[in-house]
Length: 263
Image 1 (cartoon, rainbow, N blue to C red):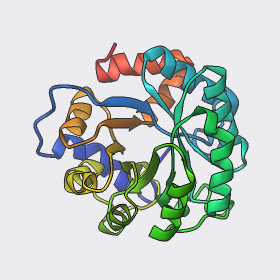
Image 2 (image 1 turned 135 degrees about the horizontal axis):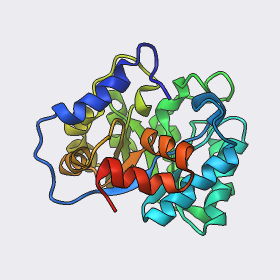
Image 3 (image 1 turned 60 degrees about the horizontal axis):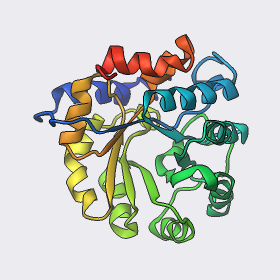
Image 4 (image 1 turned 180 degrees about the vertical axis):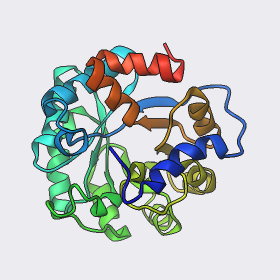
């Protein structure tokens, strides 16, 4: 679960929520389990992948929060999450790696019945755990527009934290933008994500319907700051991973109560 290189972006993410100059909002944003896969590579093989996804989805359902499903290599890292949504009668945001468009659309069809929204995490083409194993590509505006045209639910672009990526938002007009640097796992020298949200959210909202954010959220105050800075939904990964590995599905509610003061 560590950050890339020296882990500086991951550290910056966590610190930025305390450092950003922002009065907290009066109400919480929507909360979701972030798209997470790869128990073997990312979590030390702590539990079987299928069991992990089942606990994430069951725990989110019991706690009354949203689910995102991620993608990975081999394919079961995607299908186990999709199947967990089906078993528990849940819809989720389906975030697919930046494969060739044909493969993204194949995955969309596999998950269409449980997809509240679908998109791609454009920064994952440099993610160490998948870049050498999958035919990923850097997405330009034309490729993203072509995807959006084929997808019949709200379209997400995840991985926006720099000007060059904001230009894609301006060209594509996705339904949802996720301000994210992949939890500090794709680059070692980026600003904290709260700084990125403060800098980009208002501009992104001119070209999309919703702004979500992930990265470094560790307290209720962080969630309130995210809402104040323009995020309608926050995606949380590492705290929920720790909770599920320790306590199973009940770890989601435990983390919400003990770390975020919810429930």
